[in-house]
Image (tube, rainbow, N blue to C red; front, side, top):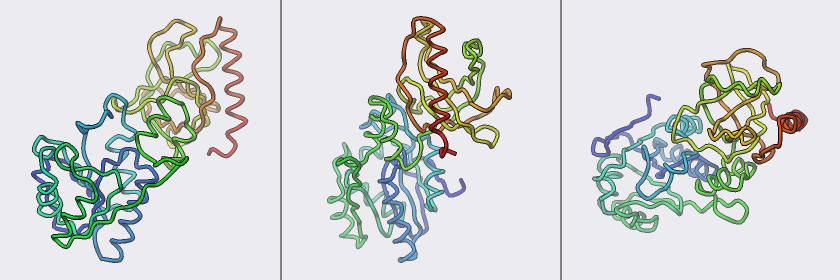
Length: 311
């Protein structure tokens, strides 16, 4: 990622004429994509460099760390670059930055350090001390420096604006994976390493890969069973993925286990990616092992029958 800059905002420097989109961009969802597409279009027309100004780590105004990120720093940057962004400036949210007035933020960051020639933001963008600046204020400040600001309208799903918060709520609270994926514009995913587990799945006739997620701040969806696509060693496999604490066995340890339907090799220590396609059911405590095995059989049959066009 040679076009990624990460560091203290006081050290920012860009000598290129940039068309900047500003925001946190957790999830890089379809509303973010509208900003990106507008930046690409404008940059081509005005001979500018499509660029992103964003943040590394949590903002003091957000509850993201306790709920989890939709995208890690690596995932966020990969998505931005794949969509056509040429430069990403990811700054630490230092005391100096968070205490800048809206006027000083525009002057010190956008004009002095980033050399912005055009700025594009969504309607919910906030900046300056305590989030006191909004898009209208930004437009007013930058107009005095002849830097145009474009305020993009909200993108709506289900009669409400799309936001990272809504997507988190779907994944964490309602289990509405379908809505989360539609707002993301792709399947929600986790990346992790296969580790040794308790071996319970194997004793039930359904061996599983136990996954340790690489980022401790990544959002883990609500407990339940999911139909997924698991990528391992460059190949994709339809899978049944369980997230939970094995209530049938009175196990309080929360784990992520993937049963790859047509895979029999050992994949310990492999890095794998899990794409969540469909939620099959919530977590259930069964009376005995036979009931659990019966339900797993039903779950895997359902996933196999419905997965015809997943890969």
